[in-house]
Amino acid sequence: MPTDVGHEIADALGTLLKRGTREQIYRRLTEGLGEAVDEVTYPVLSGLARTGPRSAAGLADEIGLDRSGVTRRATRLEEAGLLRREPDPADRRATLLALTDAGRAAIETTRQRLAAHIEDSLASWPPGEARTFARQLHRFVDHGPFTA
Amino acid sequence: MPTDVGHEIADALGTLLKRGTREQIYRRLTEGLGEAVDEVTYPVLSGLARTGPRSAAGLADEIGLDRSGVTRRATRLEEAGLLRREPDPADRRATLLALTDAGRAAIETTRQRLAAHIEDSLASWPPGEARTFARQLHRFVDHGPFTA
DNA sequence: CATATTGCGTGCGTCGCGCACGCTAGACTT
DNA sequence: AAGTCTAGCGTGCGCGACGCACGCAATATG
Image (cartoon, rainbow over all chains, first blue to last red; front, side):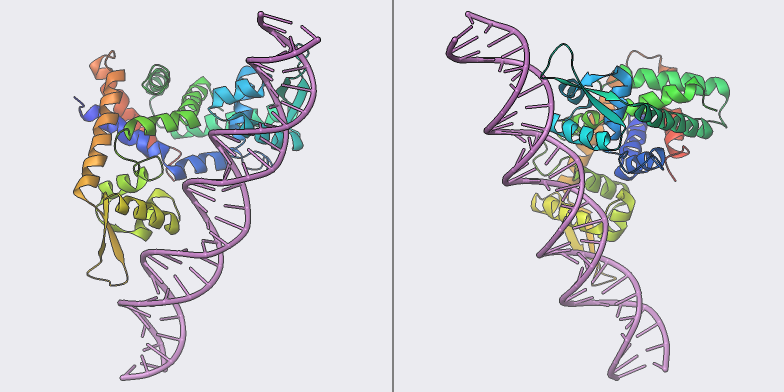
């Protein structure tokens, strides 16, 4: 039996998942980083930054995409010099996707931008409150209903 | 200067905005409601439920979409009997988009499902903590950096 | 050694989207 | 009152991303 707490969170999530919101976030994050970095290619960079060099299949599995999509995105990023394909020494049919220095720099820039942006919006909050909120949000997302 | 609080929230948002997560949420919400209700058409129903009968242009403005997209989605929903086009009595060139009873029932079902789903994941939280979290999340989304 | 399997890239069809155009109806100017 | 401009809607068109299925190379398996 849902109470108003559930509805309140649901409304907030609805606002957050709105199409325009998503585009705007990515727009700001990737501003000035070149044409290759956009809403489409960002998950590839982000995924590689999390896990390190990885095969296309594994990466596709993580970001919830078909392997063909990862291949095409990786090609675009490779042409822009943000990503490098290197042969897997242990398996000669596999090619590992790895970030170049430029790719690492780009993803680090976006991370800093997003974090700073969030901090700005929390500037007026009591410091302890912001900290507990961050921890609760993390717990909600990880142990929440949308991870399985 | 970002601290770990900003990064923690950023990571959580990143997980939440992942493609697979989004699809999965909509999948569960719209399960069994017919083919017409999916990730694409849902914002139209949701927007109409919030504001009541409305013109296509106004609705497009709210959900961050071109008018043509609203038109096509409305047509699909109209064929499924969830939406009705009625002439605007005050302006004969305008057509108001309004939910039918079936459309209202569908959107109410999804609302209850999402709220219940969220409540389930918060069942183990201390009750007061969940309430303050909901209020903080609401404030974060509304007054946050992604609303302008 | 022969066959099945894995991993990658590519062609094809599908779908959603934005843009631009046409059409109708209201608003406005003279 | 008539002509012109603007607002609102629907539709054709091209673009881009996606999933699927196929082909090719390399490995695993019997």
